[in-house]
Structure formats: structure tokens, C-alpha cells
Length: 390
Ligand code: PMP
Image 1 (spheres, rainbow, N blue to C red):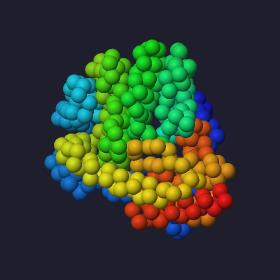
Image 2 (cartoon, helix red, strand yellow):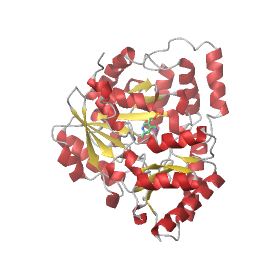
Image 3 (spheres, protein in one colour):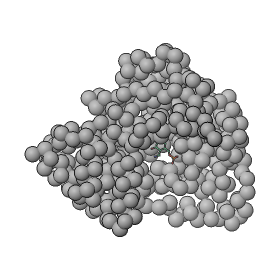
Image 4 (cartoon, helix red, strand yellow):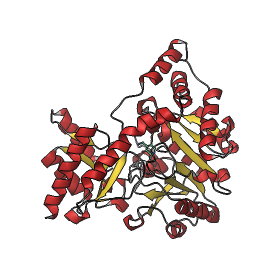
């Protein structure tokens, strides 16, 4: 029996960029000790207080079907958080609670693209973006940002591909580069959306991981709130990756259609997970800072280790749990470098090529192991690169 082209074409054929990650996992399963600097998952687990809130809610009976849009109190809590962080009036009616940011990416593209429509996204990109777009039957078109612009998309680059497109997906703070888009970049994005009548899907799941400067939500820019759908998640901010909870914030009319979509797809998020998320959000920024602090510390460690050498160039990033390193001075591709590093030093990183051609010749280092192991791995990585360049 044949399956739909939508599902068989989801990964677009060829390598999906996870070969090295899968190889590292197989080596671990075979008993080898590998330092994994691959995926965006904290080395700590969900905070015990959040787990206690989850347990208490489940014990009190929140194990049945929940309200599809999310509980009124959680939607209000998310709206208050968004309003406090951005200054833009936001109510519960602007919020849909979703099972994670990933499902929000799928839902938002379903909401704004018909089959055959063009949806733009910026590379280097979180690996699922093109597949998610193809999954809703739209055509994924990539805007290749450049290392020489610190991977910040330029107006001309968006403008060139935007005619006829329906939507633009952006991600700041960015996975994989760690780059936080500047005010000029956000203005350029808004200008292109207004000029070409695009919906903007703004993936802000790393909004608590900003190490210098500020994160600007493009929903705050003039005339943008009515055409912007913001994606948020508890995964990165509260180390709740497995709980599968996030949200979409957008215009009320779009959210009410998205609620209908959720009724026909996810049917909501478990009540005890929602209550745990509400508890966590109400703990405020202090808890968020506690959870993101290790990445800030490791970023300082990496800066120290990279200092005084010029083989590896760090992309000028100011956010997220990743470091993107330009390894082109070694003469290798990101993929070859990553594979050789795994074989010789038992350190696994992600090749830049996993995140699109724009990141070729780079590697992404996730700062997701404990400080001393991270420092040791960074020292070995630098020595390895120096040896190659010599
Ligand atoms: N967007 C980006 C940029 C991500 O890196 C991730 C997860 N790594 C997601 C969305 C999805 O996160 P989740 O579904 O866990 O909220």
C-alpha cells in the first residue's frame, strides 16, 4: 500500500544530518565512553519543585482530558509572562497551549499555509524545520544566511525569495548558531514581512538563554502583532523537554482557529503537566536563571579555552546552549571533522552541515555536560583542530 507523498517526502531524501549522532549513540550502547556535545538537552533534570507540583496535580485528579486550549489560568500566566517581557498587550485569548514547540511549529505552518504554498525559513536551522513545512504540504524554501554576517539574515536575502511566499520562520536566539538577532535584523525581517504580506512565525524557545544584550520579539515591532505567531516552550527554559509543553501566541482570530486544529490533532496537553508549567512560570525569572546558569558558565569556559588560538573561530553568539565553531582552517568539512573527532577523542559534536549548507565547515557544540568534562572536551577539541591545521 502506498503512503502519502507528504509523509514519504518529509525528510526530503538523503541524510537527515543525524548520522554522527546515531553513530555516537551506538558506540555508547556498545559500552564506549563518549562525551556527547550533540543534542540540546540539559544535563540536569526537571527541578524537584516542578515535579512535586506535577505529582500533586496528578494526585488531585488532573489525569483526565483537559481543556484543549489549555487551562484558563495557564493561558493567563503565559499571557502575563509574554506581556511582561515584551510590553505588548496579551491576554489568554492570544494563547494556545501545545504539546511542545515542535507541535506548535507544525500547527502554525498548518494555520498559515495551504498545500503548495511556499514557506520560508532561515538556515542554519533547527533540523526539523524543512520537514515540518513539507509535513503540512507546503514548499520549504531556504534563506541561506552567511557566516560573514554572523548568520544574521539580511533584508536583501529575504526580499529576493519572498515574492509569492506565505510565511517566514525565524529563530532567535538561534539553534544552531547561538546568534541573537539584532534590532536591525528584526527590523529587516519585519520590513520584508510587511512588504511581501508574509506571516511571521517566530520560534523563541531559547528566550531565557540570552547571555549579552537583549532578545527582541518581532511581535513587538510596528504592525507586526497581527501577522506574527510566536512559539514558546518550557523545554529549554525549565528543563522540561520530556513533559512536552509549549505554546503559540498570536492574534485572537488565528488562535481560535488553531484551537480547532488542536481539537482535531493533539486534543490538548495533560492537566498535571499544565499545572506543573504554571507553577514553574509563577516561580518567575529566578528559577529560569538558575536553570540557564550552567550554559552561561560553560560559555565562559569555552571562551577561555578558545582564547589565544586562531584555528577555531567562534561565531559571535550571545545566546542559547550552543557554540558554533568555524573549523574551515583545518581544511575539513564539519562532517569529516566531527567523525574524526569522534573516532580519535570519543567526543561527539554536530556537523554544521546537519543544519543546512549555510553552516558547512562549522561544528555545533552543545554545552550540555558538566563543567569539568566540558572544559576537558574543549581543550581536546582545540588541540585536535590545531594538529589538523599544522
Ligand atoms: N525550536 C528549536 C529552535 C529547537 O531547538 C527545538 C528543540 N530542540 C524546538 C523548537 C522544539 O522544542 P520542544 O518541542 O521541545 O518545545
